Image 1 (cartoon, rainbow, N blue to C red):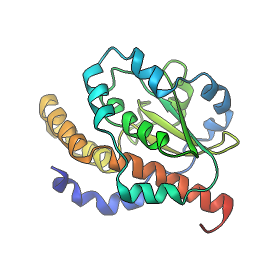
Image 2: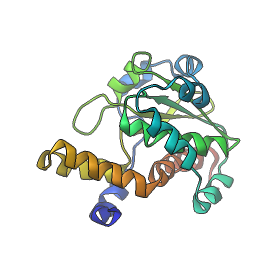
Image 3: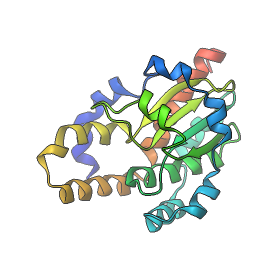
Image 4: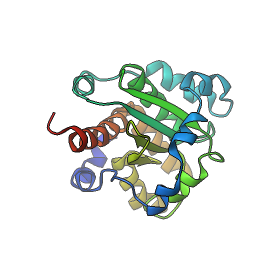
Length: 208
């Protein structure tokens, strides 16, 4: 399944999640939102919808060796503010892996708020086709300033969905989407978050 997405490699290189995407985001109090967030363990304990998917991905999550080596080189302190709801299948296939990444990295912490609390973040940082969506993940530096976002899906899957979703039935699209997530096992989502942190870290601290 992953092979059908190789065409997107160049696109991904050019469209990795950028720094702050909308000037409205400067009006958002990210520190306050982060302070209202739940830990992943608390969120998972309360998850009802798609619970089996959340639990399965949590149990299978791990940080690949190559990503672990990148984590070891990170400088500074970083926070992931996640806007997510338990009913969202994309959230259920991304957030457990980011929780694992944060759990293995002393310099990365994560909190989750629901879509009502985090509505402004979603509205200010929409999908390429103009929708506020979950999950929206804001990467924050040590002063709670956003340095980048991962919105709804990893780049490869996002670009494929934009190109192909309208050509498929809902059931076919979901089948292929879940197959991609299962094969990827969170690696691209974790890698994109590290890409954002690495770029911001170089900017803040100079060459690593």
